[in-house]
Length: 238
Image 1 (cartoon, one colour):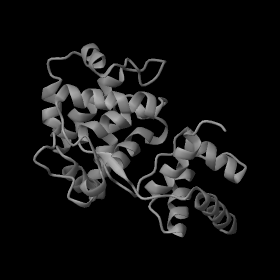
Image 2 (cartoon, helix red, strand yellow; image 1 turned 45 degrees about the horizontal axis):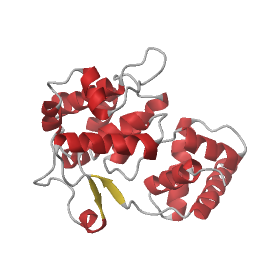
Image 3 (cartoon, one colour; image 1 turned 180 degrees about the horizontal axis):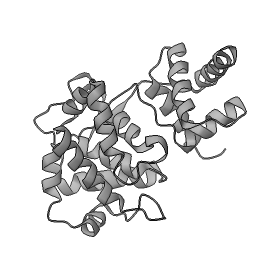
Image 4 (tube, rainbow, N blue to C red; image 1 turned 90 degrees about the vertical axis):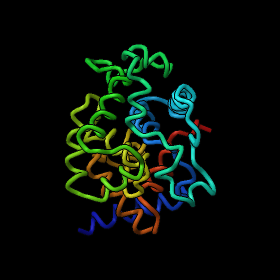
């Protein structure tokens, strides 16, 4: 128990130096959260993912693409200008998977070995949420997230879509991007940081526990801890 406590405190002290901050903005539509989460795996976020998400938003004529500032003080969902997932699926129903990938400007696949186009995964994720779990909006997603049984069932279905990643990394990222501040996404950036911090290999499962416990020590959200590490690791070397 002492070793576990020591690891938590070492992680918390290292995190304190990164100055974790609350969420400053978020995508304004669940479809954009799914796009962001799916394409972020092994892809540069600012250079590839953000332009891709905005490309779809432009194609679909969406407003309130990125909510920030005073917009976050108001209910982000439901909103009169919020795209439902059914509307998202309708917007691409006449596009085959290659054509949808072309709209997004990316032919990235979930894996170089037997992976599927990420455009295919995005469509399938939206279909799972609508058809199996009656999720249409960010508010619906928040309601699902508050129910452990519904969450477990949704996670199982979503992880059946190719490209979920090690220990369901993509699924956790969908939850985070859609507004769940209690989730973390221990991707390669986070795992490298924790391994350097503790001087040993850290598994995805252990990383989840360490970040949540360290965040509690610092009185910040797990999302803030995860994001602070990710931003630090993603910075170009000085």
